Image (cartoon, rainbow over all chains, first blue to last red; front, side, top):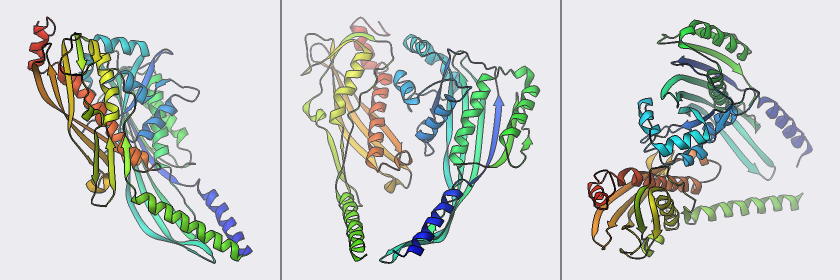
Length: 272
Length: 209
């Protein structure tokens, strides 16, 4: 192969590698507190994907795993039970056919002696239901690759937009009540120009949503929040998000506070 | 340089040939996992389960319009499924051969009447889906038919969860989900069937006793 061509490919590869970290994502996070929270070192949490039938928007398994892993990691980690381990331990009461849809279904379910005993054994305090999915909302462009005796190469331009929309409903198993909801909507456009070598500029939409959906519930549960001091909590929420939104300043807006709620939108270019 | 080019062309041709050959073969899926023991209050009866040879060898083969042939083997999962149900639902349980046994109060005889599946190509969705229709029969201590009821189970799996692993693991996950759904539905349904409630009552057990 021509040494010049090899050199060109190497340079393009290096540029592609450096551009891999440059995708941009715009996220909106909304938090609604409906009850008091707090978690002890002995308490555990499970993150479950909503799979009630029939549905065509099942939450991805790896997203649920990602959220579980992130909640169970870091300095402020909490005890998280793996989803499949929980489903097997509680079988058949959290299967798609039998899983509780509303908090009003919880008391009857937990009222069953064998189930209550099992819940005590595993120390479950909170259920975090994740609903939503990542969808490709738009794509355009074309890219052609060819291989010949002289070498291989691609030419063209692709662009696509991904939208990760998730909502976490947090239920307190002990009280049988919903304590809050956190929703995250992340949108990002990825690009792939190709001149001999494709240069992917990927927007890490889903991983950004995963981080948000793990960090927010973790902070939400650990914060001894009360519906009585909503305004104070709301201020703290906004301040913390400003730190997260390195780059451009966040746009903070408050939604109608049924009990207490806050939302924030921010734009960030984060590493993959 | 010529040798290098010839080798590269040969390698590419072999890869294409291998991929083509793989695409033409039948895909076989079997569900042989362990199943969890249900967390329910045990019924104080001794139950026998007869899994006949037809059930244990059950396999569904279908050629789709695309020309691809699929085979789903469910027979191998039946023993594990019903073993878990016996262990969790009844005070005592054992596998038997035949509709009567001196050691048990009743004998349950399941059979698979129908199995259907669909692929994302057929439904234009991301999901593999599997439907299983069981026919369940419960025989009393003297071999008399106590209850006979259908049990329909459904399982789906998102092919995007298995995008790097091919289609077989996705269909396998859907089949496994259908088996778990069959178990869940059996547990929920069993105590609500009037004929079974009467049978439990006649045995001095159950809600109407």
